[in-house]
Length: 150
Image 1 (cartoon, rainbow, N blue to C red):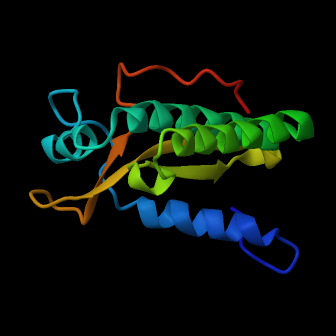
Image 2: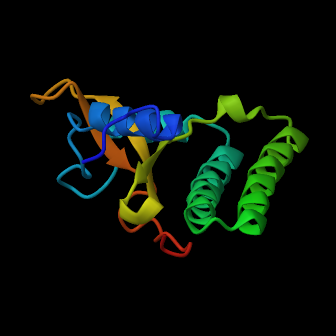
């Protein structure tokens, strides 16, 4: 395993730290396969445009990371422009992107300089042994990732 040194890209060290911090979270959906009631309630209270924004944001994030992994500057720029377009569409509807709950998206460095990513919500684990639990987004059955693999 590589360690952070002056020859390592600094952003890889920060990403590795984020992955290590999330390692203590319980992964996976609730036993019933849905999203937890507290998250469902929070998301349902938001304007309908937030649901579309959230899902498109996650897809654009995955495309952006896949483009970074392939060193494809054109695809990277396209994904970044897609994120900007999504924010503009919300603004046109009178909404600020910060009013919408957005999942945390993590970039994971892989061997050979490749990258992978995943998104989800980190919720307090009030009933379990962990500090947090991780709820993947989109939820299982909510649509597969469509970008190219790294």
